[in-house]
Length: 142
Image (cartoon, rainbow, N blue to C red; front, top):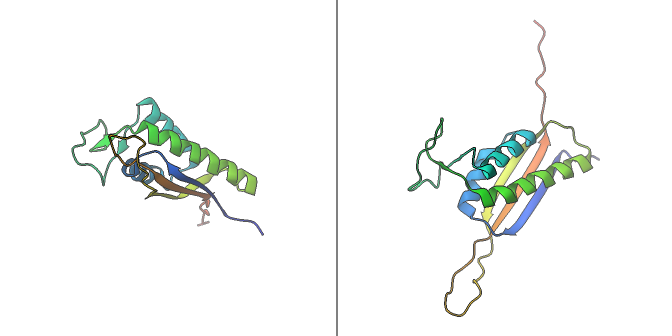
């Protein structure tokens, strides 16, 4: 029995949930290679992530996106998860054209920041990525 979907989980990552939701929406339904290039561009500050849901007081960017930012820290963690999911797919024996079929960010545990004076809760996020083989379109003979 072969599995068709390879998954990668990131639990309790110290990144913003709102930024993670926008990045997941940005890379969902793209190939693994394309999403790795996009995330590396975000880390370098070349490509902006479009903020469609959490876009209050977010400025406009060049190009076709209206509002966007460069969430570098969250992109680094999600890039590691994309590479992990790709390795899991290779271990399962899936084909090379892989598509990110599921990218989901949820709120994680909110721990208290250590200290005596300031009591601040930390940001934690759970992320799930699932990749599967892309289905090639069949050419119809006319």
